[in-house]
Amino acid sequence: MEELITKINARRLSVQQFIQRQGPRNRILINIAIISGIAGTVLTGIPAVGGQSAIDGLKAMTQPPLPIWQILCIAAALFTATATVATSLRNNHDTATKLSKAQACEAKLEMLELLIGSNQIELKQAIEKYGEYSAEIAFIPHT
Image (cartoon, rainbow, N blue to C red; front, side, top):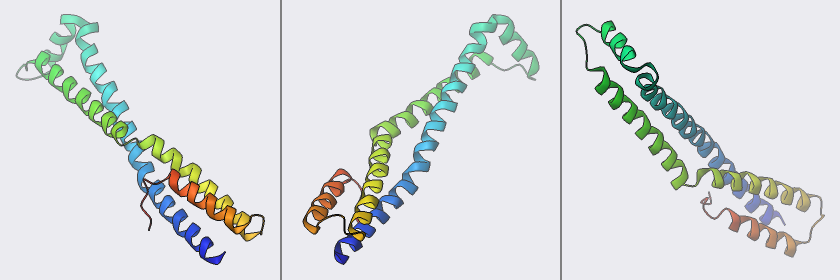
């Protein structure tokens, strides 16, 4: 039983490290996508809502007058591209799903450890559960 508990603890550690690394990355990518998407929308909305008078007002604030249309379009394109890249990175790595699986599995491994420690489960069944739970998070390397 001690060997299994040692393996469970090691696996839990690797899962916790994964969650600690990927959680902040996931939040950063979400925030970048949201903020960049909003910024791109606002930049394209200025001429759409304000029309030529909005463009003329912006030109009047710059010395010498700058090509406001082009600046707005370039900035909107850059923000939209940033939002798209952040969303694609998050989706391509399936970050949200992996984090969810890791968090659920960490809880299962903790419960298994408690069951073993209180002699509420037989060794064979505990080993089977450990294998099942580890298979659910095969994307997390062992430490």
